[in-house]
Image (cartoon, rainbow, N blue to C red):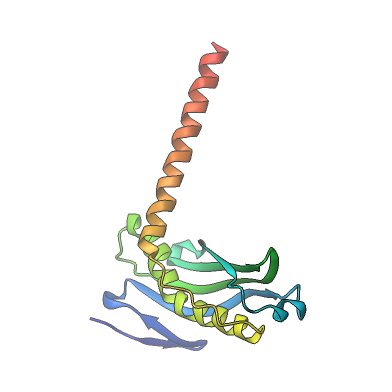
Length: 176
């Protein structure tokens, strides 16, 4: 069953069975640089090399109430003939809470997958608009597989922990 609730601060959106409630979303940081304007517009024939990177972070606001902030960061840059066309960076945040009946082990995956999945369309539109308003073609960011992104992050953390454990064992052995 899907329910919607509204709060004093605005409308909250709730997913099926109220596993996660989205209370608000907002721009935390937005930066756009056009360092070579207007010269960069003189040679529009060459296609730019565009790079887009993503990251997702979360932090507890109130762990007792299962209340978290999720931040989706998108960094984009475009180069043309070794000149920077633009640099854009957006940190887009959201405030979420998790249902009390949800298993403790499921909280992190839900926050780190469903949180950015909800935020992405808003962040995508902002990046498209800011690049267009900066004098370039709108940046059309393709959908992101947040499940895969989360799995990759967990794998990297596991590898780092294994490497630290190996280093610790090697140091202990060297001390003997």
